[in-house]
Image 1 (cartoon, rainbow, N blue to C red):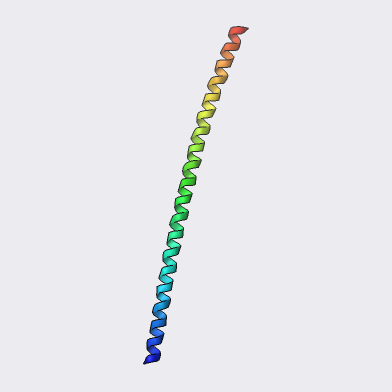
Image 2 (cartoon, rainbow, N blue to C red):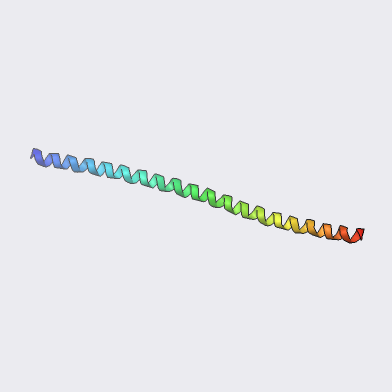
Length: 72
């Protein structure tokens, strides 16, 4: 009987350890998901900034063309 109890206790310990490992892996997964989300947001913002910059460049180029025509 004592041997059976020892086995049961060992299995309980293993189950506890495995549950702890699963919880740690889930936390790591959540952290990575959050980091990926932040990176995606930064990428989206940089894309918006790039688009706005290109629009501004085109506007300035048009202004230069207009001023060049006035001077010539």
